[in-house]
Image (tube, rainbow, N blue to C red; front, side, top):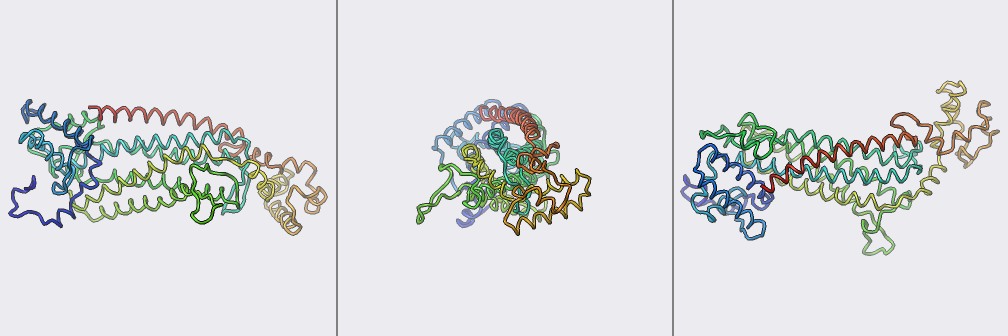
Length: 475
């Protein structure tokens, strides 16, 4: 008989068991289910709801069950539906009927909400560490390429030269926003729903705050209906994960482009590429392509969760069983991508000469010619038109701006002197952008310094919260 089967007169149809069971995927919550149960049973003892000897027996039994799960000795049954009922059944088998007292004053509704919050807390810390590793890898490439000039693009057309270091730092700050979104979301994840019962609380004189403090939550969910039906924290995580995926995918797209023969700006290490089964010459950036491809998978989980929640009345509904697989898969997808990204970035070869040659063979210094004329007191709109004519002349004569003689320049404006070449050299064009956040070398060095300070803040947050997670796991 099911642990909840007292009012039923016949067993559940086997197809129903198969269709409704979640044990195939919610086994990931086992360690967190036991953590929550240990805190819950200690609270039951402290509140004199169950005798101390029973609480000790239950706690010892839970530790024994945890060890068997860890060693692969515990058999999970689809008949017992989910991780909560499986653990309770294992506990009763371990210590006898007293194990049935564990569920006093709680429901699977508040129990699963607790487990998911505990799981997500640990995942956020892991993902934050991996994000920081990626930031540091980008920062290292930036430091090593402070003199490497790269074509900057808009509309995928060459626009203005930038430092390769400046380009890398753009992603550092993207991932910094991701870090900050994760740390900010912690306060909404870290609220304890346990004690809300099925939806309305419980008649037992429990101490919800005691359990919350025992599990290092910042507080409790204030409304029992909201506590069991809230999955905002899952949606927020999936949204944040989608933005991380956006940033990863954009960088992947650039790696794919840059490693092609048409760009030839970088070469990814062999360890992060694959070959063709037919064409022996091929070296494919498959890791970058697959990370880019899995972005849609993460988006799908976000949309799936939003769609599941949009029509649900309060409080818990079985639809909400759909909250786990998408969250689990997103965590695994992100961890997999981020874990590969840091070493892939660290080991890639930056082809500095090819980048420089690309900058030397385009018209991305045209704005500087216009600015040069503005410095000679020509209105910008007039200088813009003049430079447009110069560029057209170059295109018609298969030349670049630096190829023109002073006499050719002066056909378009007598204001142009021999000092123009100092203005149009790639290094000069880059360093002319000497404004806060610009691509001038000294400004990029400032960005590097700011990032180092942010890394320290990130590391302190990670260490603080990692310690919290480890304390809970050790307990």
